[in-house]
Amino acid sequence: MVIDLAGLSVTRRKRPVLHGVTLSIGKGEFVGLIGPNGAGKSSLMEAMLGLIPFTGRSSLAQMTPADRARHAAYLPQAREIAWPVSVEDLVALGRIPWPGGRRSGADRAAIDAAIARMGLEPFRKRTALRLSGGEQNRALIARALAQDTPLLIADEPIAGLDPAQQLACLRLFRDLAVEGRTVLASIHDLGLAARFCSRLVLLSGGHVLADGPAAEVLQDTLLRRAFGIGVRRVETPDGPAILPV
Image 1 (spheres, rainbow, N blue to C red):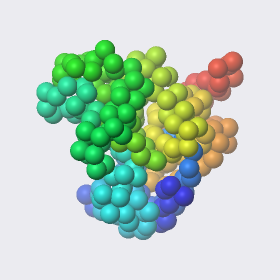
Image 2: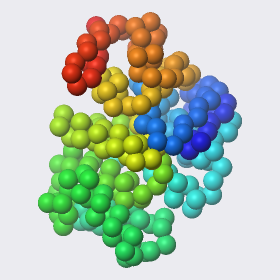
Image 3: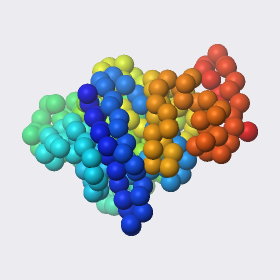
């Protein structure tokens, strides 16, 4: 298993956030983590990586920091570019866990591939701080891709992207899974999650409420329990559209 969690619980500011989450994710899966605001999605990602205190077991948190950095790339929800570096240099930061010092042939190939996959070639030499918010988001995704890890964990990766870039990003994640990598991403758009993810995990109140294919997870009764709303599912030639009602 690429991710193996058992009985993972988190308390933040004396408030229980996650309650005994057990979850396994294998190679080549694109898993969409869905659920309402405050369900614990970000806390789950941070805890499994060992970034915040937790009880229970996480296979990722058991790794040494160096091994974990070569196993998992993480794109947090709070994304900020702090220095006026070029897009190329920003993406190159993803190569820090590897021994080439960002100068080896493997480093250059990974950096160039990440820039190309995110459509950033025209911005390669531009100062990252001069990009739009959506372009900065794409550059940070490229940095995670350049890390070239078996696992990518992304917290709301399509937030701030325009519709075309949302589709491009999720197609990319699906392609990564087809290539054998594993992707875990939190996604608020249920229709896009249903269309692109091979599996959905519905988190509500710090518990896994449902886990499985989209057709099983996106049931009206489950979504009413999690979100307090119903949905209307419309089948289209491009996949299901999920309309909140």
